[in-house]
Amino acid sequence: MTAQLTTSLGDVSAQFFGEPTSKGEIIVALQGKSSNLDVITEWEPTCRALAAAGHHVVLPDLHSNPSTKPGTIRPEGVAEVVMNAVAQAGATSVALLGKSWGGGEAVIFAAAHRSLVSKLVLVAPSLSVPEKIPEIATLPTLLFWARDDPVKAFDLAADFTSQLERCSFQPTDSGGHRVLPEYCPHIVAFMATLPGDVAS
Image 1 (tube, rainbow, N blue to C red):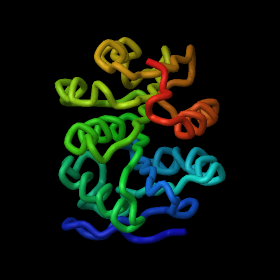
Image 2 (tube, rainbow, N blue to C red):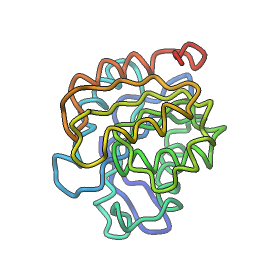
Image 3 (cartoon, rainbow, N blue to C red):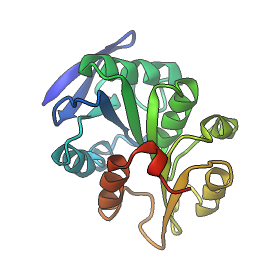
Image 4 (cartoon, one colour):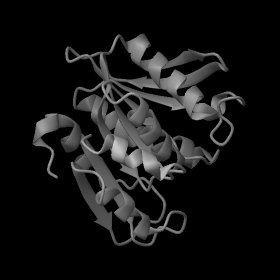
């Protein structure tokens, strides 16, 4: 289902997958910065798999509004989009998926709304404010990074693994700067665990 998320910057088109759950949690996926269709839709297979596993997932297309496109929108605007998705779903907690630019924004949002965010899935996050990492130190986090990533160097993963107390790190030898299909079952399994069950 496609619907609109309302922000002070205007409406943002979003895809909704699955139905609201009794747990009151929603998953919001944040895309990479590129306006290429393959990047805008990169999270779709994961969103469908999560919905099939019983989750309610929202995938905003931030490029659907010139004022909200990645690179233009500020973290406060991203927060509005996420909070609107939470409100529209009647959710009481949110788990975030973020790749590259979206991963950095997911960290910033989680640091500012720690009590609301239950889990974080990051794929080669691009974070301009690394001082935010300690603020989410206890947040269950699943981190993916390819050693051959040409955009965000693999060595940057150490900034996260060294500071996050509950980080499950899944490095891959190849895959570049992408959300790989093999990440999907790991993400579905991660979302099925209770926060206290996440390996450190």
